[in-house]
Amino acid sequence: MKTYQEFIAEAKKCWPGYKKKGTKKLFGKTYNNCVKEDIELEESSTGEKSRGRATLARGRGADMTRQERTTAAIAKKAGLRGTGKYSTKDLRTRARDYTTYDSEDTDDDYGSTEQDHFIRTYSSARRAAKGERLISKMKSAGRTPSGMTKLKTATSSESVRREKDLKKQMTKSGASKTGRVHTVDIMHRDSDVGKGDRNQQMERGRNFIQAIKDTPKHLEKAGAKKGDTVIGKPTAVMPGEDKKTGEAKRAKLYGKIFGKRSSKKSNKTGLMVGKVD
Image 1: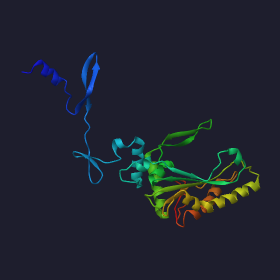
Image 2: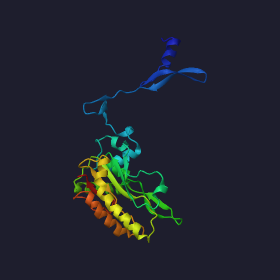
Image 3: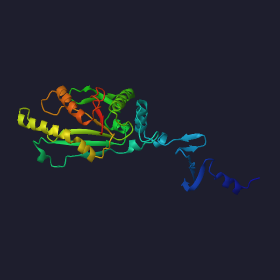
């Protein structure tokens, strides 16, 4: 028969799966502080961690945020991959920016017709798809009477379609589907050029054409390597310029720097895709 002291000692033990980690006081009495035991995970030669029969692959479950799981799932359906099958490294790697714009004083650029290169480098195609908002849970649903944009929840299938289109464009252009992706935007410094100011508009046009010619040089400065994917969104840049005509002109110029096999502008993504030669 157990003594009173033995009975109390046994009662103070932690239940299975838990271990004692100090004590705590509750209502003036001292109790064991029982915490859940850490189950050691054994790492296999393939880099996966196992616990009994269950396999815990990196980048799954608790290792990924909800947004990362959504992005990874959509990218997987579209056929885009990151730095590894289960890795979240590319999703967590911040894009690196490069720009030729070197003035922080906007007054210095008032009326300027100069063009700047803005190049953003992503670690993978799925990271680029996320960064360029091809993966989005919201979409435009018109405007309110006050002019504000209305948003509504978009289905994931829309994001999958946009990503599949990006992959198709990459395949056609001969660009890598798993390497780094560089987005290129060429922007004028100042938008306050009058519609009737023909001289400044022509100067801006000449500067834009020169900026197109300089793009390969700036891609190299941004760290782009041969075979890397390059994407861009050609848009009209002149005040009063017809939107469709302007986009077509820009797309033709972009085609010259995106390689001979560069894709046409996609209606789904609004992007042109090429590769670094």
